[in-house]
Length: 154
Image (tube, rainbow, N blue to C red; front, top):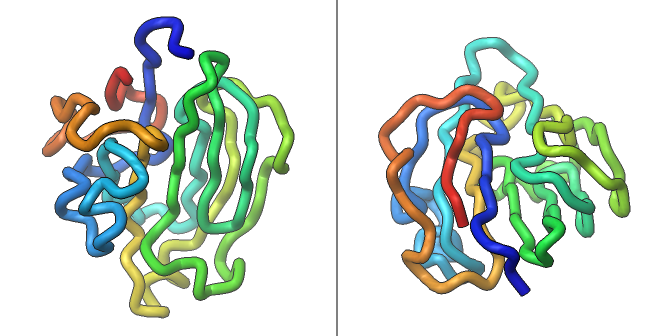
């Protein structure tokens, strides 16, 4: 149910890394889909995470959200690794499940200091759900991106 390429933008500013380098076997093994991750620039304190595509928010948790684009493909943005264990501490929801969002719309804000103090990684996987392993271009890996910069086309 795809209408052609889906342009995905960076939901946070930082350095793009390969999923294989994410300290979580589910993401590193591309078990939920292919994508990349961003090691966020956390120097500025509270960090706002935006929607990488326009669409509908079908799942929203403080630590992660899924947005489904107009072509029916879902993108997962996971804010940090094991951050579900924080039970929302250090996170603020800026959008709700069921909301229609534009590409670049704020969805969640988090405090990287809270994540670091808990001993967790703030790396943010951006994954095309249910996509085959290695099916997302990796050209952005190694680059530093700003919020809204092109990340990949799926």
